[in-house]
Amino acid sequence: MKAYVIGLDYGSDSVRAVMIDAQNGAELASEVFWYPRWRAQKYCKPEINQFRQHPLDHIEGLEHTITTVVQQSGVAPETVKGICIDTTGSSPMPVTEGGVALAMVPGFEENPNAMMVLWKDHTAVKEANEINELARGWGGVDFTKYEGGIYSSEWFWAKILHVAREDKDVIDATHTWMEHCDFITYLLADEKDLKKFKRSRCAAGHKAMWHESWGGLPDAAFLSKLDPYLASLRDDLYEETFTSNEIAGNLNKEWAGKLGLTTDTVIAVGTFDAHAGAVGAKVDHHALVRVMGTSTCDIMVSSNEAIGDKTVKGICGQVDGSVIPGMVGLEAGQSAFGDVLAWFKSVLQWPIDNLVLNSKVLSEEQKAELKAEIESKFIRSLAEQAESIPLSEVVPIALDWVNGRRTPDANQELKSAISGISLGTKAPHIFKALVNAICFGSKMIVDRFEDEGVKIDTVIGIGGVARKSPFIMQTLANVLNMPIKVAESDQAPALGAAIYAAVASGIHKNVIEASKVMGSDFEAKYSPQSSQVEVYAKLLEDYKQLGSFVEQQTNKNK
Image (cartoon, rainbow, N blue to C red; front, top):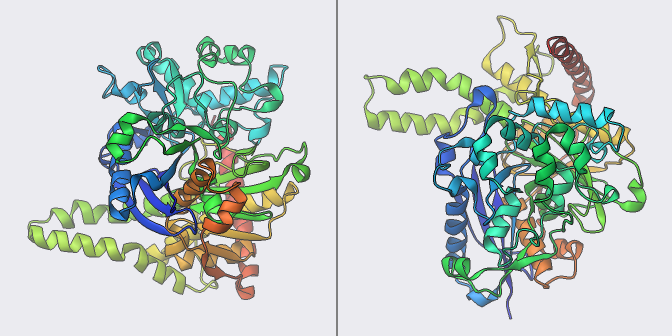
């Protein structure tokens, strides 16, 4: 009998589902749903780095995408053996005692503090700083040591602490908090006891300071020094965590009816998108998988024997089983990658949006056609002209910190900067400087891994940037001085989630075996160009000097 699995991948802007043949990894159908409230930027305040999402966006997307791939593929419902969900993270949300997202409760429907706090929300910088200061000085275990030694405002406890201090009504109505990947998994599964429900090892280990060596979450004595609420909340969270090859439950009757499936379908434990993407790209020893989208997540795996008791400084985390069960997953990343270029596009597009497209000279039809033409050519034209600029020509130096720095050494208070602008600097020069910056930021991550004794032989790129921008990928290969392979799949995280589902439902024995059968092939390879490697090495030193100056000034102004 044929066996199929569904991977559901929640990104920052949309959710996508894929129907995968578990015997060979073939994609039968896929569907994307763009979050309507998010597209309208409801509940967000970019000026204070507040980014919230309403769970209705996620729930509507869940129903639309899965019902669509079930219908498009034409498979019999009983042949769909498993579903696994991956999401962004850390993206926690408050939940009632009945397991309902608080934003779905009357009175909280329009309250941003009752919604999911998206990974890139940096409103909790102050709280993260408090966590770091306490972890280093309270006299007990340093609960940040498996998260690179620096806790980020992007993560679980800092975000909850910020909301707790800002909105007592939300806290009084909240029973527990769930990461996005746990909440959607809980929504689908038939296990409705919140204490028994299996929470994600990946989410807890990388973002909530969960570790087996100290018995799970940070202890109440530590949390109470931050805020008594956190200590009391701990009792309503979890002790154990589970890897995504395990079963969280079966599809419950309500959602089986909505999705056109059966209650025999297994729901796997949830995970984060980058970790699932690494599985979809056949991650292996000494390979760095870069999930390149609005930001990057950089994932590696290591045997327990190789990593031992060593902790890698300045990364996002190292967690046993977060990628491949039985191996240690290592995570780093950049807070902005594609977002750096998107920011520059929005700056350049201001006169078009506000003057040209509001002109009374053009008809509405002409405006629509012009807007579509500009959209299709904007980044491509900039990239073509930037690529043609010889390295001998002066190009500004830029930093990639438009959304702070994730790794190495998290600091979300940092801002970007550009130096070396002259009257000869044109838009393509700045675009090239920004491309260089995101590649230099990548190089800093690779260097940190290698300085800490983690060997990297090759880099695997997945995501839209990797597949659509040869200019960026070739620049990256030159900056890293390493070969880069690009995964063929458009949906590597969703494919990775489907691989987990295939293991949880018993179709494959383990994740490594399943990824070899179902994982993505590679469509391109970029090799370093020896003539450019040395030039980029010199430019990297300029990037480091500018970064050091900006960081010093930031520290002075605190």
